[in-house]
Amino acid sequence: MMYFGMDKLADITQMEEWKRAYSAAIEQLDLLYQEENRLYYSTYAQGIQSERLREIMSVKHNLMTNESIALELESKKKTFEKDSIWNRRLEVFLSKMKQESLDSQDELVAVQHMLQSELLESSFTVNGKEYNLGSVHSTIMEDPDRELRKRLFKEAKKVGARNETLFRELIQIRNQLAKELGYQNYYHFRCSLQEMDMEAYIDEMNDLLESARDRSDYWDDRIKEKFGYKEIHQYDQYFSVFNYQESSEADLFKAERIKEVFFGTLASFGLSMDDLPLSVECLEIPYGGFCINIHPTDTRVVVNKRDAYSVYVSGLHELGHAIDGVYSSYQYPELYRFYSSIAAEGVAELFQTIATDKEFLMKHFKLDETTVNQLLEQKELMDIKMVKMNFYYSLVEYELYTNPERNFQEVANECYKEVFGAEGEAFHPASEMFYIENPAFFQDYNMALAIREMILSAFKITSPYGKPEIIQQLVEKYLEPNQLYTWQERVNRLCSEEFTFRYLKRVLGKGKRNG
Image (tube, rainbow, N blue to C red; front, side):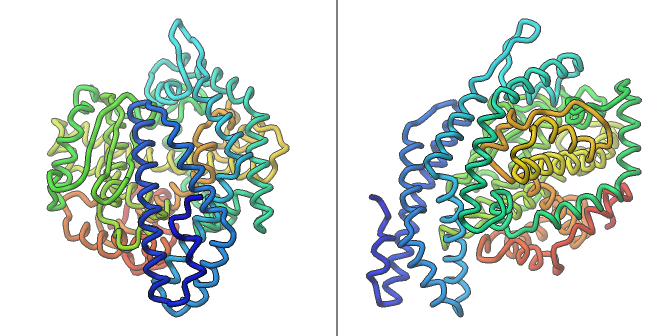
């Protein structure tokens, strides 16, 4: 078995030698994670499937489920109680062991792979054209043909209905394994790893949506008027956000210009893309974009090869992830690798505000004042809709893990009415790959939006564009320390305030940003 020397730690009695052996083991393990990330990049960017990924999962499973190693690390963690760095290193690694040991359990992995294959291989023909779930997602976001969006939505629901039994099995296995670790269910387990409270989040969201009700109703009325809808269905939500403003935007927002625009954005921070270990590609992918941080010297961004404003919104979000990957300290590889997704999404959301920065838009695109103002106005619409969509998806998933015996379609329909205040056709949860591959994740986006608003308020800005001194503070207090501190501690270091939804609530409630 490959344990990278972790299994020998218990035999070492001299403390400094133990530390060296542990650090050497972590460095070797991280090489495996780097290889895994390179293979994932090949899968997502080039469609290359590798059997080596299964081998790596097996190696990780053997290590992360080794109880004697976990006991040794728990014992040493107590020894290092007064050494904050070593205590935190072991805390983060043990937390990851807990997650990996559960998520790489054989029965669970078998069902998850079966479900992933079912969804990846599902396809159907509408109007003589073949679609898969990935192309359904991008079409529902961008295609103005409402009838086509509706038909694709219905076909995707059929795929979900066919896979409901399998998805329920996956949820029940996850729940059972979480209960064996002492958690109420799998969702609570994942939230504890993220150092967050789901019930408190739901209360905050309900309060926030109540305060934003007037602005939300205002935008719904404008959407109905603009597109001629009597009701806004789920297959209208993303489309209406990304296509609300009118302009010949495909001509303005060419995907091929993304590198050039990244170059200009980084220059506004006093950085040069030539000096950063960052590769950027435009490829035909079924989502806006993704970033894989293999190592601080190897960060890769892919954006959708589509000419649309939304591609730049996604691209700037991914640029935030890339900057995070480049500037996070690699001094302790486990703290780099096992990052907080809440903290990471906070950075990405901060960078996404650049897409609605007036100076940025005027400088990098040949836009007239009217178009710029339309895009700026669209910012409020996007914020309100994304908060509601994120809350909706997290609420559906939370209910599935809390009551897995329920009819999944009914759960989605009920939650849609609760969040959007209207009856409407809702998606089927078992058609959503995100739930299978990235469980209990959607609330992280709204936590990140709250972090974004805290940062904007603390520095009295509307975006970080052209503000190298703020980027410097972001790097020093928030990015560079990575998991040496909890995400809440990092927010406090940067904003001099405890984490709060107050600023996000204020912005969505008033329709304007203070500062």
